[in-house]
Image 1 (spheres, rainbow, N blue to C red):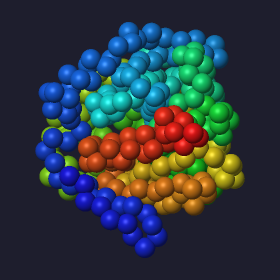
Image 2: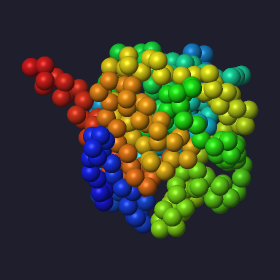
Image 3: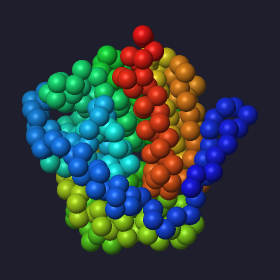
Length: 321
């Protein structure tokens, strides 16, 4: 259950609530419906800008491109898919991660944004809703700025604009994040999950919701490892990138979602995005960290899908009549 209220600034806030069924799949009946809508047999690879990009699809409806963050493969979206009924969700491995090619680096945010645009072209999708989290949110910003015609609406989760206008995390947090990414598929699953938990959630929330550890232990074997050298290529590409001066150029309807206890990308970064992107809506999940979707999976995903539907193709057609 989500508890929410608007504050004096107009920012909508929800509180992360204690739930045992955290970031889990919906009840059996809804799972079955989701399986029935998975009608497209995946075409798992596409050659984009000379790089083989691995991708998958789930569901039917308006296209929704899901862009994952630093070092994580597209399978990290698996926990979200059952909550995205009514959308054709497309999730993929960024270059250098998962089952995509791992060319020599460094990689740039511009390259990865062009990869995302190229994937839409390969799938004959003229435009899509775009949801990016963490580094994926930076890629989503760049995609929107470089290819505005391809983005129907934009959701930015736990991300930043980069550059000097960003609020950075503590250096030891970056060290832990790199260790977690480089340890994926190499460390024992229990050790890997225990090292990851403090980066994603507050200690008190994990204590109140022990099921999250079990969920991550179940997902861990599904995540293909990212080689340390390519993780470093991706990290190197982030340091020189910034969207701050260009954010007012974004015309796509934009929703920004962020946990106020995020230790990887502090919440002040969300406020910068909201101030700079015209008409952007800011939603803060109180008590939530970088893994905010897991802390209120039903409420957060309902927020996102309601926003996407409000800016969908059918709504635009109806408004133009």
